[in-house]
Image (cartoon, rainbow, N blue to C red; front, top):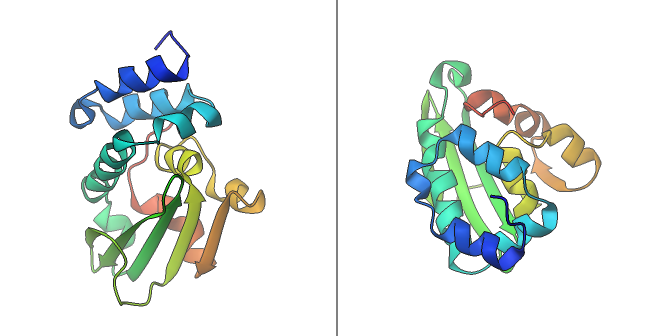
Length: 157
């Protein structure tokens, strides 16, 4: 991705088959982009494709042994050109992802902008640092939120 102009970058990413991009490659792509570039990429229909792919893979990258008998509903609110909400339900070694807000009460809610979300899920952002810098807002169980990364295989970049 040598060309860093936003339009060409967005066009280049729009042509990617995200289902064929490994988590490690996705992490490298995110690492190579500035917050402004990530924000630009997360506008329009590409945003929906990226969020769907990230949350779609969350179930595959779930580590049941690490979660043990944990039972928790995690609500993700990703802010940007519009707010997107997803929920991750962890229960007895299973992980289910749904788009949208349910009536259930989440154990923790994470709120962050597009760029911070992409950094967090790609292993390019430290959740504790993001929280301390107010780039990640947490409502509910802060301890659960701070340890979420251990329940998923996240690339080391």
